[in-house]
Length: 288
Image 1 (cartoon, one colour):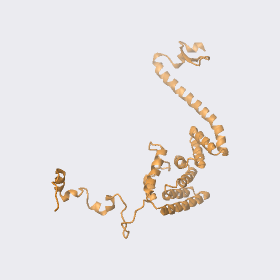
Image 2 (cartoon, one colour):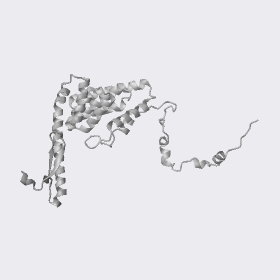
Image 3 (tube, rainbow, N blue to C red):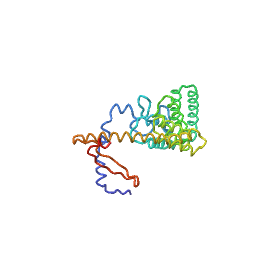
Image 4 (cartoon, rainbow, N blue to C red):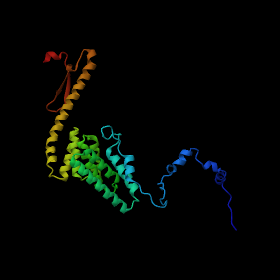
């Protein structure tokens, strides 16, 4: 004999729910036309076996999560570091590809290699825009698990962008290449050149030093490590003078209502201790 338990208050309340309550109020003709938008998985195409696994297309994720470019093709800064963005993108792709068969991954890798070679041909001919497009398509196909392959593609695309004066976008691609393969000397060297071109001398020197650590035979990096420290020192001196000039102008603006100027205050350094002292001078012109 079957035994029945007394229904709990929660079960009774659930039993009183009407079937109409289960229908979402926002469901309408538009939703009926696009049923795949109501689910989170892949919708089977006509004639496709619904039991077959759906594998994510790398191209869709790349286009959806790619960097936003301005009118000149340079990546727009959204306030977060490019390294964090790259890690999120690569981790996102790896997660999507975790169930992809090895055979499919190798197929995509082969296709991306073909697109890379096509891009190299365009680059040699001077068709840098076409080369950039080929490298981009290769990145859209290349699985994220092949990090060194993707590093080469980012570096090659950076070279194509450099030729088109897309400096910031090229810098972003070089950084992605280095993050995927920290020992990639060519990507480091390209990024160092771009940093120097944009007058980011400290960052350039750091990359040139990293290149020498990995390959001491790179003459360009050795020469830059000898040249840049002097340029950095000269730049810092120039910035210091400009800053002191602005502070002097500000001081004169504050002192003017009192009939004074910064000339009334003389700063002297003690040669023995290195400390500074400030002396007030009533008539600075008479002391010259």
